[in-house]
Length: 287
Image (cartoon, rainbow, N blue to C red; front, side, top):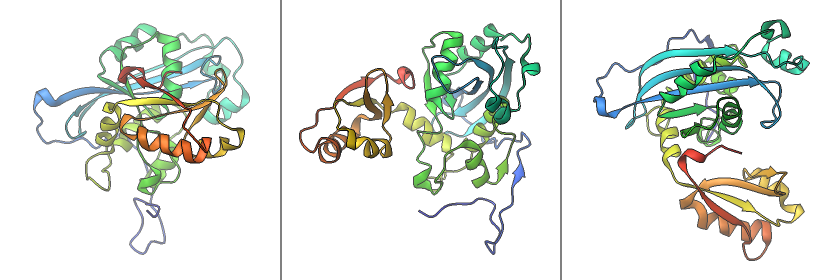
């Protein structure tokens, strides 16, 4: 599929971008009350990318209601935003990326109870990189028995003609821009993006994401994989677990046979020696 640009001129010589102004695409069509659910889009900013050591400095979220059958957003609710002094100087790269300074964070304390209350109201929590945002959030607020969804990994952006899945790049492809890498702006941009129609179904991207979040998955660990297979594993979406010294990925249970065949052919060059475990819907995106 060729790369898609929303906002391209008729002669295909220019692309028009609009600053997102907070005007979400909300349906006015009536929806049965029993079909309405509450979602929460969440984002964190931290002192680095290590989910076990780095400190969260900014947390934001926005509640919304959606039709669980179609994924259509029917209302957009309140927001939460809180800053936190990490007790250390911010790395210069974090200031460059986020614009946050030590002065912005000095003496700031998170509203932990307010954040927990927000999460309690959600039927599903969505982040654009849930493998990062969930462990960071749960280190701060404690484990939550909630289903999380990842708008970065659980939508096939590349297959839809968007070869880069970073939020600010996807926004550009979809005709809008925003102040990226501040938690509140990232939250609203992600929610806005999820209301755009999927080119194959005409339903919002949110519908595709919800279906992926409901699907049973397995964690596959490519134990004892030959060193020379690392590039093939990485290209297929496997990630390195430094503690257990193996490559791993999560895939739908329905794809297990195909995955085993791929591992036999491309990794082990013989019988599949990988290990797999079922992952509960509320356990996904934890380390």
